[in-house]
Length: 78
Image (cartoon, rainbow, N blue to C red; front, side):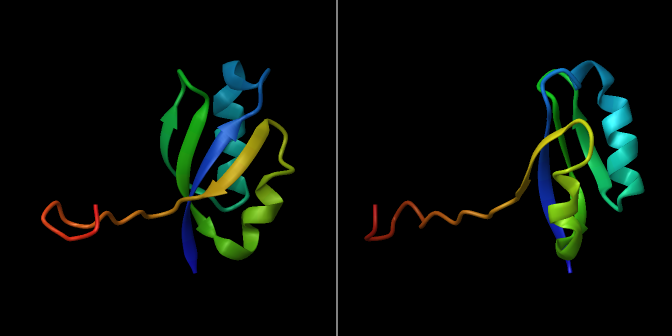
């Protein structure tokens, strides 16, 4: 099953973010956004391959996206 991920580029690799993107794509990540100014890449990949992404050269961290649902403004829980 494909999961959305947020990948932080390791310090010292931000200036070579395109190389990191290429490595991630070769590892099976479908890159959606490259936020160059902050060194973050978003995309999706198979959950079974997420752990392997963390050892790629230039990858600082890999986090699975989470969804947060807040109650409606008129609900009793506030």
